[in-house]
Length: 552
Image (tube, rainbow, N blue to C red):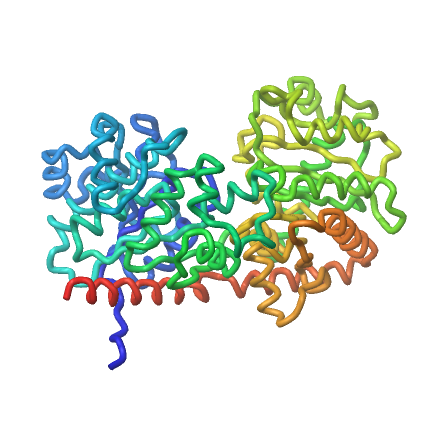
């Protein structure tokens, strides 16, 4: 007899990045919320950490009149919460919880996790305690809300993201078995660690033992809670086929569903507004670059950018730098290149000398000292990007056909130099390059093509695999996305191929480049949430049916 297709009556969702803009998962949740709200109007509650406490959080719209009966009960139960709405499209309900009181009983929490699920927290360090205390607090919130408000709701789902919220999923699985649980890993902790420690991940994936590697790389506690949660929740999911294979090999658990990361295009300007926004972005990029280097950049300059987390190897920053170095001598580059590395580092402050220059609407013809970076860094002498540029003699000389500028800050609109948000600058790029070695999905290339910026990525990124699958073949730059084959040992070949792709694009006339930009945008439209949300409903169905089997 076929299983009945089940849909949730109510959805809880928890992440460290709810109302807390720190990474890619924020984009996943905040862009998807509107689509979920359309089909589950206010039957959706996000639970996040109250890291802002008494400070004003622009992402959180507090509403003290919301759920008065429950909030009173929750306070009586010892929960420190604030309730309201998330200030994003759709404005879903959100509960922020102060998790700090639970540090006092963390040993009891860890003991229970060991007794019920064999989660090993003995080797915890770093952010493990903080993450687990939030996850536990989120679990208490979900339990309390359910018992007070939702007992008559038959199909309730609790979805958690990354190992940081696993403790809460296991708590709900044990204490409130009526709630179906879903765990989504966006990257396995041990896979990321293997790659980051420069061990070959792909050729040897089949041979690695996740538990053994966790011990070798001092990742035992994070790996343990991730692995045990994957094995115990009602539905285990990830974000791409490449990570699904990683989960199978390193967590010894096949995923029940793949939930690819979608996008919303409502904030991508159109028509004349798009043209004006692009011109504004390019003007500001060239203005900052001129003030820094003393070189005047014309609109013929090819602006090539990379961005994302500062993971030197995993995100392909090493490939990007080597590509730009070889680009100094590339005969086939038809336009001068301005390369931007927009990767937040351990920033100290905006360069004072650069700020001084930007106060005046002047075109400069002399460079600043060391005209390679827009913001100073702590421990700057040990920074990988700056050391590469120095050691390779890349000083942004006037006669160099490639200039490289390191922007080591969060582009939140208040960085002190560009003072424009990331998306407002992204639209000014001609080409984006994300030559990742480890990239479970890849929001940066998806964001780029959404803003009509063609991009280069790799075959080991989830987005790259998806682009190839959509086309039914290897995607090329003429398609809007170049997917370059990458493996454990072909670094130099990847660099050559990235440079060849940039050179090819530089040789296209404006009409052909516009055609490529349109193809990039059309590909992005295939990744809208209205297409990808169906995968979530399949996960809800799996979780609810597995819960029913569990409760029999």
